[in-house]
Amino acid sequence: MGRKTVNVALIGVGFMGSEHSKAYSLAPVIFPDIAAVPVKKLICDINETAVRKNAEQWGYEEWCTDWKEVIARDDIDIVDICVPPNLHSEIAIEAMKAGKFVMSEKPLTTTVEDCEKLVAATKEYHGRSAVAFNKRRWPAVNFARKLIKDGVIGTPLTYNGRYLQGGGDEFAKYYTFRSNILTGGGFADSCSHIVDMCRFILDDQYDEVVGTTEVFWNEAFEASKDGGEPVRHERDAEDMSMIIARMKSGVTATLYQSSAYAGAGEDISFEVCGTKGMVRWSGANPSVFQLALNTKDPETDGTKSILMGPAHPYGQAVPPLAGFGVGVVDCMSFQAYEAVNACVNGTKYTPDFCDALEVIKVCDAVRESKKKRAWVKI
Image: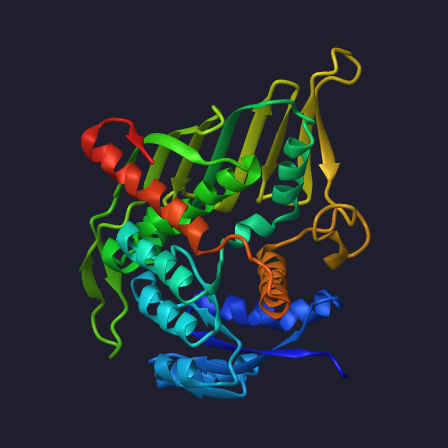
């Protein structure tokens, strides 16, 4: 009662659209100090049946099938874009022109050129932007960044990041059947998370990269809309990528992504080795953070497990005992919390469109590296 509100319009009712809707519902419950309660005002998708169903399921007040109706509304504060990446640019630019705060899923665009246009539009229209790299919101990711900034593990020397997904060939083929034109490929879609996490945890920038990507399956099948035979697609979305990067600070980073890693389910992880110690974490066991310090004391040397708890970043959003797990749903709500606060308070949200451009540059450079079989400057 009496809490300030902010109106949200969501465009796109696929998997990520549902996750964003869920997050807007949870954020004001988890965070009593949120700057405003997000009101799910309007939801949009070209599929009328799907958008009606989602409006009812997630409690949106209204629905429509044309994203331009969203932009024209004076009562919309936040436009949240969850459609395929090849559609992001036009919608985001028009939303910024209309003075909306824009949240967009990643990858932000499918090309560096389109992303540069978006960044230029942000400056031209004084746009405020946010990109849904929700993996940044894991408490362990923020804790690692803090420890590194505080010099706990000394000067970082190497960074290792992995993102593994999979349940065999059928998972990979269905998960990333669409072409790079539509999605940026499985590589840009998934690997962009660990490219961003590396930048964030180290508070660093990429200098040059060498790498490769692989497509393991060249065809995939989409369920027919009329219930007939599945529709065959030629498939060029990469299933795997390997990257070696030199960061501006001198850190050497290795990044490995696979959407065809049978048995992994979903596991995103990182390890940072420094001159005084090491930090390590895996999303498969999110409550456990590992820290090793070179104390030169045989009784205290070695890797110690720290249970993430209320003293850690976003800890106030989970039960007040160490060891309660934080999952993807929580991270999405943390993201919604930060986006609403930035919109209402007029503060900068990170990562924004400029950050997303740096990630897309790395993805583009890796593909160039594969063609040239050489290091590529960012």
